[in-house]
Image (cartoon, rainbow, N blue to C red; front, side, top):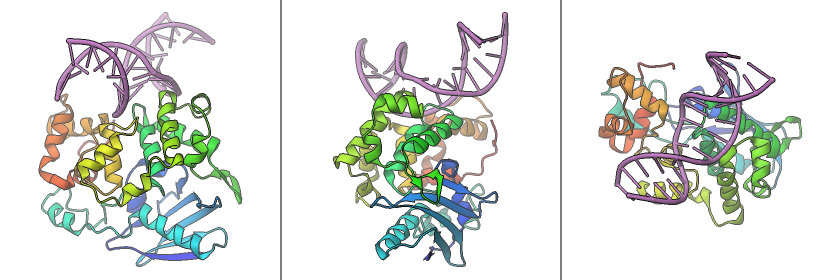
Length: 294
DNA sequence: GGTAGACCTGGACGC
DNA sequence: GCGTCCAGGTCTACC
């Protein structure tokens, strides 16, 4: 079965795929040239499907490995639109960026969109897995979480969907520590899963909430395990760019870009992008850094 | 509001 | 093989 979805121009699937490290985490996958995005998705009633997304002249095509009802097709169309930001318009930012040599190429490359997970729950869990650890460990924890708790794809049981809040809520801290090796993050993950599964916390509503960014940030930071960096990262995914996700890598980049590699801190990173106002996060994310490796 | 120390894991390194 | 050090954000307690 194949769905066709249109995208607000300019759009490039490979640019979205390569927008950040999420593509290296399950249940995402891509080919060597980042021309195709595949992932395993669990539909609300519990059916697990494999999806293959490719670029078309006006957007993307979504192929599934089984037949779907109209409601299931609508669900997938909605989720893929969200994940790839198909309806996002960056023309206002492109107009500003055209005057900055370090960002001037963005429109030509169709940059701006960042790859998102189907649910904000999944994005929050993965963001928590990026904190206070090395990227290789983030991948390992995410792999283990999906392998241990995610529903497998019937057509290829080795592949799994990201675990639901209900599934994670049914486990315990000891199991999370032992099976997924998430360490002290176990109570954070469990607490979040239980809050979402019980209905006490409606994370999906935050995707479209009519809130000031400061209030949205406050709500995200009320989640245990989500601090300043994690909240800024999640706000980026929610299309709010007023904060820069300052981690050790951001500090290193800014240090080499403007301070000759001398030690700097969070204030220097924020100062460097202050004049971008509501677009700070986007300017930071797609800046053409002179420093590229560690 | 600012700061110190604890929280965990696993890779790197020295012995 | 073993022990030690280190990197990586957030939380809590304390001032």
